[in-house]
Length: 423
Image 1 (tube, rainbow, N blue to C red):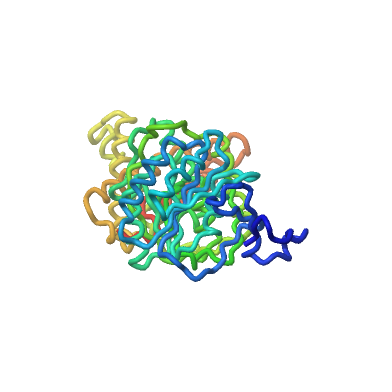
Image 2: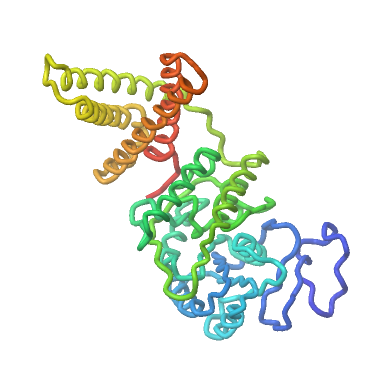
């Protein structure tokens, strides 16, 4: 570690041993040194069980209540709390330093010259001494009491424990429908671009998690924006994953930092992970056998739809109106397809989530996805027939094939997700 009286660092950072690649930009010796150089977590002989990083920017009002609650939750554990502040104008780092006498496990880093939540977390991990590395937001929107549940999940064998809004016990306190739809839309997009990464957790946008140090050591991380969890799963050597439900709270003090730029950074991050081909998650081949089962179930749904449509709408039968008959026939066909898929196509995935509430949730997702598929089918048929001049029946066949693949893949990743969740 280089201090004020040591020799100057070499010009070429590549020649500097990692443990010397630190500079102290503050005169206050109570501050942790700020690492420089590549964003690589080194192996270390742990001196504590847990290193919890709190990245902050203008969170002076929240520091004291957050540290007090975390200390109470972690009482009796071997841990350290590292607050990494991006040189906040409200001097959050200074407010945290005032608490060190009361909370000896608290350490503070003031970053100057760098900014960004993801890199702040990694810089904190670089100076940490824990066997397990963690992150929690500094605004009290992540309930501190869930730290204990996440740590318990790691102790039970998980490499990664994620606090999720989308599993049992999870939720959102007060989000509008637009923000909910934006969040879900980002998740679906992630599933399409990086299914083997995003598909491993129910809440890939979560910024509240723990990971074993050994799962991300000697890996150069290159995050973009705020969604560091994607980087950990995509580039790390992460085995079993556990998820713990939590209620995302509304901010009580300070100002929200959610901006359009965050969503643009998220898209950029997805593209980077995809294009560089450095994803180390387990590779999954397209499940042909499961897809064929899904297709056979779909054929049974066509039969049910046609039969009911005839019985309901034909003048020689009930003679109902065309629209009413079609809507009812389609919905019953969807129910038929869901039942067969749940009991046959995705039986192995469904049996571990057999509660009535979980089945109902799967059905609602399946119904919504099928409705989206129906709309997509009509749009594709019109595009192929009206703009490309393809025969209407051939166009309909192509549209059905594409929509069947869409329905299968999205249902696999959302309605019957392939995850390593431990509940």
